[in-house]
Every structure is written in structure tokens, then in C-alpha cells.
Image 1 (cartoon, rainbow, N blue to C red):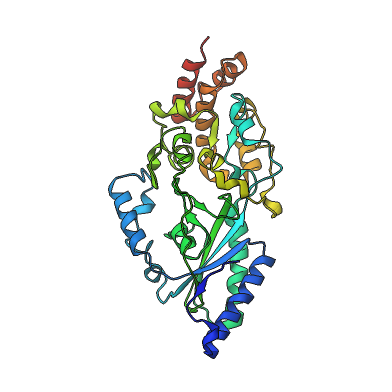
Image 2: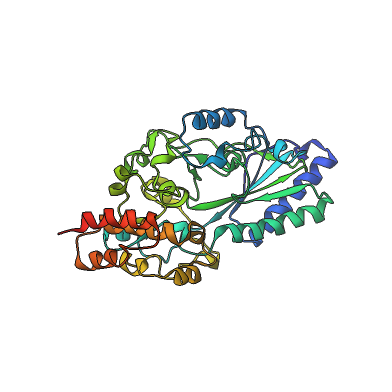
Length: 365
């Protein structure tokens, strides 16, 4: 699952090294049984990535994601977050929903709602965390060590640099992780441990001269290779941002109501993407083909019932309506869109009312 191992070479005749190599093989086999598509092991050295993170934060590119600047240096120093940590076990799990409606078809339909492919099924946090906990338990059973902690977007962790260092892929110019054999449509998770497992050689980069992802970004958020200004990113605007979406960017969002995949859709390496095998990543509630008007008509209760167990649930009903209002403002002018917006012109939420008013001004014939 992860070639080019170094450290603790069992060929040296060191019994402990041989035991660790065997332990690693056992973990890889169990990871496959749990549904993970790749496993690698990284050291905890992230000095260069720490410098890049600090530069990114100093430039204010994290916007209102204040949690990115919290916890001091724990994000880039695993042994500060969990004292005693020596290794990071990193895993990948594919999520590409092969049975979903074609992404470009949905993006090309101004009346349709586009939702990032990762959010069409169940919440990946729960799926990966469940598998990682079982993998960590197996590690504990085989070693007796209780020193480990599981992470799936749940703490200050530099997951992409750690996955790169574990040989699972390289960080592309769009700042997503890319694997030669799997593209970029996958989730990542980590286990911090004090068990000195054999580590992998960090993955080398293979973007070459390609810059397809940069002009593909609808809002110009990829300002230079490996430089992302989150304040312009549609995923940030529709998911992380809690207040008003800047007017200058609303028209560029199109019909994307939760996240954005454009930089991945144009990446040549995704011709090697592997379809998800986990049943929880299958499309739910027709989210791959629903219309904007249909989703805008959901009540708070319907949103809660249908988005329960989905990553979308965490943005809440108010931001859900805010996002769809913007998309309706970008939709082809129609009486159906205008009527849907007018029905929420007096919404209790000032945030929703603001974006509905903007959308109505764009929908007037």
C-alpha cells in the first residue's frame, strides 16, 4: 500500500526491526479489510511546512477560520499535540461517487444545484473515524501501547503534509493531495503513535508544468502555484464563512451551493481516480441532480431530517438557504426562480433576507 520504506530495515538482522516491519504489514492488511485504500507511515518533522503555514496565516489567507491560528505550534508539531508521538500513520479512502450524475452536466445546468462530490453521501468524519479507531485498537492489541490518538479533521493536524511524507501522494498546485494511482478524490485520516514503525519515503511531486487548476478556479482563489487564498475559495465561502458572502464574489459562485470541485475536475491525474467502494459514500437524497428551487423549498425540519448524518448538516439551515439564494440569483431568469425567492423575501433571518434581495435584483426580467 505504501512503497519505499526506510528506517528499521528488517534486512539488518535487528529482531526489533523485523517485528516492526511485520507489525506494519499486519496493519496494512487490516486497513484494507476496514475499507482504506492506502496506508503510509510518516515521521513528525514538518519544519518546512510550519514555515509555509505561518506565512499563510500572516497573509490573512485563512479568513475567518480562526481555528487555523489557534493552538500555537501544535498543528505542525505532532509531539506537542500528543507528547511522545514518534510516528503518524496516514490513510486514504476513496470517495468518488461513480453513480452520481456527471459533475460537468450539473455545473452546466443553471437550474440545478451543485454539491461537492465528497458531500453527496454520509459524513466522512464518522466513516473514517470508525475505521481508524478499529485500526488503532489493532495497534494496541499487537503492541500493548495505549499511546495513540485518531484524527479526522478533528484537531490541529497538517494532514496533507503528513500524508505526503507518508508516501500517499504529493500536494498539487491547487493545494490538494494527488496520488499517481488514485487522483485526488479521497479522504485522509491519521493515527498519532509512539510505536517507531518503519516510515515511507515522502512522495515526489508530478504536476510538472501543468497549471490547469489555476484558471479553472471560478473565483481566482489559487493565486499562484501552491498558494490558496481561502477568502476567495467557494468551499470557504459556502461552508466556513458564517456571515454575508461578499457581493463581488456572489456572481462567480454560479450554482455551487456547497463546496467546489472545479480544480479537481480539470486535474489530469484524476483520470486515475478510483470509485468509492464504501456504501456510505453513495448519493443520498438525490443531491447530485436536485434543482435549486426544490432544495430552496425545504423547511428547517426537512433540512434537519434529510441532512442528518451528512457533512452538509453542520452549516445549518440558515447558511443552506443563503447559499441557494446566491445560486438562484445566478440562475437563468425564470418565473419559478423569482417565485421561490419571493416566498422567502421576509425570512426571519437577516442573512437570508439580504441574499434573497440580491438574488431577486438579478432575477428581475
